[in-house]
Amino acid sequence: MKSPVIVWLRQELRLNDHPALEAAGGNGRPVILCFIRNTATHRSWLPGAASCWWLHHSLHEISQKVQNAGGEIVLRSGNPAEEITKISIESGASAVYWTNAIEPSDRKDELLLRAELEKNAIGSEGFEGNLLFDPSEIKSQSGTPFRVFTPFWKNCLKTRAKMRTVQKSSMPVFSQTSLESESLDSWNLLPKRPDWAQRFNSVWQPGEDGGQAALSSFVNRAPDYEQDRNYPAKDNTSRLSPYLHFGNISAAQAFSATDQQNLSNEGALSFQRELGWREFCAHLLIHFPQMPEKSFRPEFSKFPWIEDHDALVAWQKGCTGFPIVDAGMRQLWQTGWMHNRVRMVAASVLVKHLLVHWKHGQQWFWDTLVDADLASNSAGWQWVAGCGADAAPYFRVFNPVLQGQKFDPDGNYIKQWVPELMDLPKKYLHAPWLAPTEVLKNANLEIGKDYPAPLVEPDVGRKRALNALAQLKKL
Image (cartoon, rainbow, N blue to C red; front, side, top):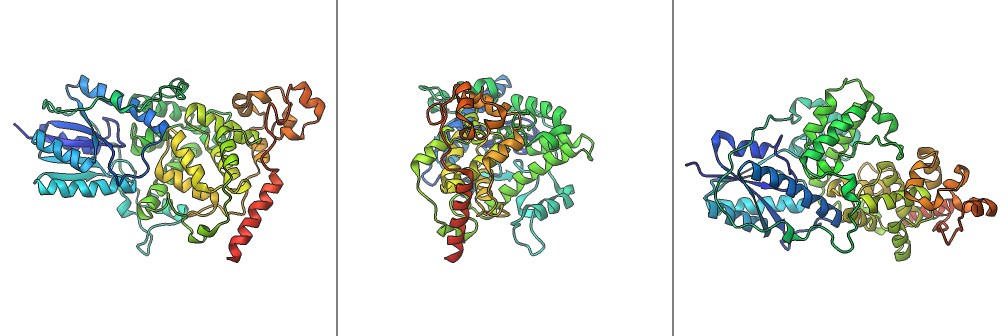
């Protein structure tokens, strides 16, 4: 009887287009799937609360599929290197396969696991499966990592022949070895009281089936993606980010599905460029692992941030007095997701108008987004703050009023998430504090009581941000 091969699952919670799983099941070898809840002391950036909700449901779905195919997923908690080595010895496995990781802590786990397995004469192999391109092969002409997106993506497209393509998949034969396994419910990944994720269930279907349905739905809307993606009231973004983060679908599947559209289609090309940005963020994190902790541009370590707890809490609760920002922050809290254009505006208000350190915003998004991705989250926050690679200049300050007027002109997005402004005329919807007393009265609205005054006037916040930048330049 052939010895089994273990497949270590992490952020590739699917059974299709799974190179490590396909390789493990080759030649009819029995396969054991395992997932380790990482509690190692060296582990940083443990999954946030919203991510835990998604993880639970994704693991539940894939576990059911594996059970229906005659197998099981071994669940354990602890140090991955130690636990997987134990499982290997207990099962008599000949090798352990996995999908190569992006996050620094996960990559460290791979090195530790290789060393432990080698001590026990057990084979190991990592496969590319999370990204379109092998990160080790994407380099500038000088052989150094890219720091600017456009040349990075051009380089990727020039080497498109090396881009990972969707693999045909077949269900492996699962090992019948009985191994000790923890119950998913015992991990307490779901909120209880209060159940703040109650609305998530009506918005999302985590897992591979949900990911494939979301991808199919988006492909039908892809032709309009480029022209509509910046308007939050229009449901024309892909909403594939959590499925990609947890590997419910692969980047190759997403690229291929839109590539089957006409290649000249602006919507498909625009979406593929967003997949390219995801690759770029991963590229940055792999080559600059301190990105979530330190400003990419070291001079920003001396930036005069303000520790304003009250302003931070108001921002978190969607009570800044800027309707487009408050709509986004409330959408985030209720659904675990926020429209990308609004993410940029909300982040800009925090780090520029309020001068709150970008790391506070990064942490809040990490805990509340179902698509919280360490590479994209840290790169995105540093981009807005002006301290990252290929970042927007710090002096580019989004005006939340103008952004709302431009991208939510009829106020439908604002009215959905900030219902207290429902009866306010469109003329004043993006700056309620400027409405005349009579208009506010007719709308049953009192600024400071029913809806907050802005934490700072837009022009005042912009000037304060530029003054802070001027101080930095003097240092």
